[in-house]
Length: 231
Length: 127
Image 1 (cartoon, rainbow over the protein chains, first blue to last red):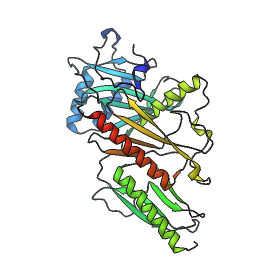
Image 2 (image 1 turned 120 degrees about the vertical axis):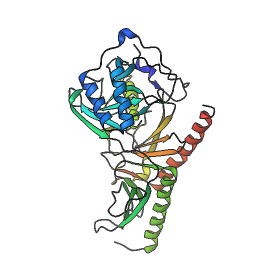
Image 3 (image 1 turned 90 degrees about the vertical axis):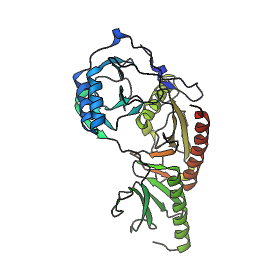
Image 4 (image 1 turned 135 degrees about the horizontal axis):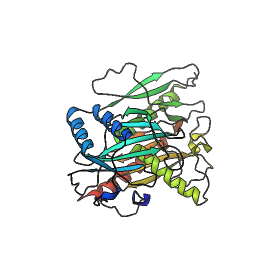
């Protein structure tokens, strides 16, 4: 059994290789129906090459529970020796389901660097250990992928209830039309002339884009102050 | 990684509470509330290193003026990580409370992220 302290390394602690200790065969079990059906559903949403590889791995997989509450399951693929590696990655589809008490739990599926099935992890949003995830409540979520090719777009917005016009910020793909974009944040000048950047929802951006937003916000602030207009 | 971040935070908070270091309930307060003077809020951060990946990431949160800061015990609104191509990636989270920052706080986050980026790239040389 591994304890959870093996899974978390705090800053300052030495980096460890994520090398695979030979699984204790006695700890291996067959996958449950819920696990199999989740992995199949993920596979069916992937591109054909990745899907076939995942389905093939599924047929070779036996499970090893790595944490006391079985919230981390590592797969042992018959006939496949995993080399030493440090980077695992998630499949682009994840699941969300309810724990026995209704707490939301996310289910992530990981592959090793050779894209072979590696781990399944339950991330509970509640306190306390994982209880009994209810697979019948499973919903699949496609994670937005960071491509880094999106660009920032801005819209000046006037609202009679706002002290000054404010700017909505969105991210759109290279070839996307900017019309009616979904803003993820705004920057606005308040009654006291202070500038606030307010985040509405998820967005992923580069450092340059982060700095571009600051520059635009300052520009807008200066313009509003210079206009001297009360709205 | 995004959710992994939450998970590690939660684990740390639980540990803190177990040791009697107070509550970590993120709904004790609604940081970043627009009605308040947001310039008085403090940006807090923690750097996490996940043993199962070679990369670490920073999570940023907001504490009100007088709220105590416990390491790992805040509800993050932003994650900064180094992507596989070594670029910095800023990922904003959706929160149930409004997250409002001053532009100075926005800049401070960028500065901190750059320092972290340089450090990570140095450490990773020869990997």
